[in-house]
Every structure is written in structure tokens, then in C-alpha cells.
Amino acid sequence: MTTQATLSPLESNASLETNKKTPILLKVLVMVSIMSLIGGTLTAVMTYMNVGLGDTFIQQWLSSFALAATVMMPIGMGMMALMTKVVNTLLPEKSEHIRNLVTGLIMAVFMESLMAFITAANTVGFSDASDFTVGWFNGFIAALPIGLAIMVVMSMTIKPKIEKFLKS
Image 1 (tube, rainbow, N blue to C red):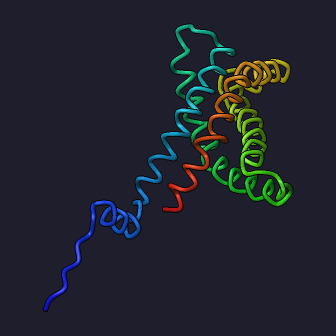
Image 2: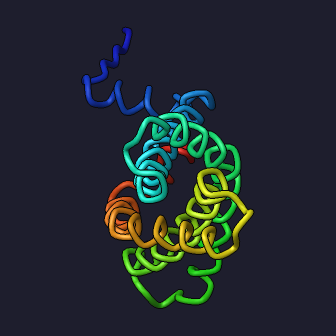
Image 3: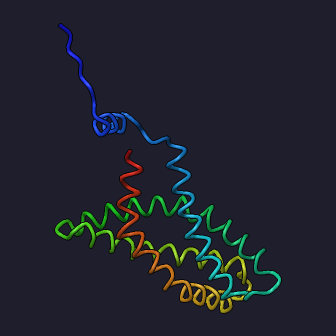
């Protein structure tokens, strides 16, 4: 007498998914893609505010984006982890949505001010402190509505999915 067991398609897929780990390269590519899209969009707005759509826009934007990406991405990853931990510690009684929204708001302001600094330094320079300050402020204020819109979408929908994806 032999016993045969068959798995339904749902059971076999579930067992495969529990044993399957997401490759680290895929995780890195997803994070770099998201940060590049956000950083590219925001630095483009900031560069436009500082130099306009003239002949030097593309060159200025690409160099501002490259600088922001090399500085912003590592700092952003660390700050996101730190801010999530701090907000979760300070607001344990609040819902996860509220904590994600607060974390996103802090991150949006912090990262945009950093990107505006980098973009102003690249496009305006430090030779005149007044021009630099105006360049930083104009870039920051122009990109703020876009950054806040991205923050709401990221905090409320994408961040929880990304966290789950990164833990897989």
C-alpha cells in the first residue's frame, strides 16, 4: 500500500515562495532606481530654478544629479533607517500610517534641503553667499511641493512594500 500526496497549485506556490530569497542585487537595483527617479526629478526642478532652460541646463542638471546621488543616496538610506527608528520610538501609540507620514515629512525636508544645497553649490557656487542662499532657497521652495507629493505616496504606499521586499 502506497500513499500519494498531491499539492494543489496554491500550496506548491506558497511553499516555493517561503524558500525563495530575493537576490541582493535586485534589492539594490530597486532602491537605486527609486532614489534616482526621486533625486533626478527634484534636482531637475532645482537646477531649472537656478539656471533656467538654457544651453547649460542638461550639463548642470546631470552634474547636480550625480553629486546629489553620490552624497544623497548613502545619507538618505542611513537617515531613513534612523528616522524610522526615532519616530517609532517617539510615537509608539500612533498608527503605522501616521508614523510613516511623519517619517516621510522629516525625510522630505531633510533630503530636499540637502539636494538644494548640492544643486546651488554646483550651479551658483560659493563665491557670493547671498547668491548661494537665494539659489538654495529658490531650489528648495520650488521642489518642496513635488517632494511632499512624492513623500506622501512613498510613505503611505511604497515604503511599507519596500520594507517587506527588502526583508525578503
